[in-house]
Length: 97
Image 1: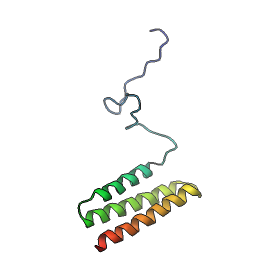
Image 2: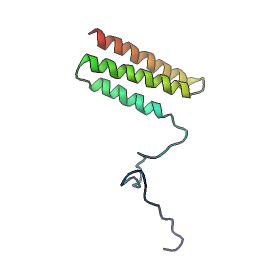
Image 3: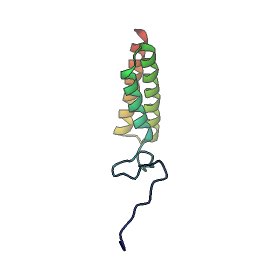
Image 4: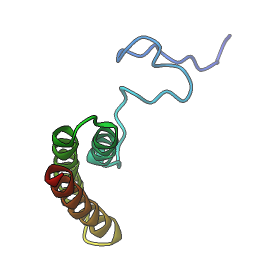
């Protein structure tokens, strides 16, 4: 096929060249701490005991703070700061009992 664009295999991991698969690739313009904070919140919700949930919520709050630091002042930054505050409150509630 002369002139056809051929996609080179990904060096990140086998199978990463599949359409729609973005894991292992660098994305510019996205805040990486947002996805990490969301994952920590999911871990907290799925936690089997209060201590584990509390630690996961504190981790999520720290990651929301880091996400907020990367944003310019505005709606996104305020939203991330509110998420951090909410997760800290949930962590205190989980550790209290």
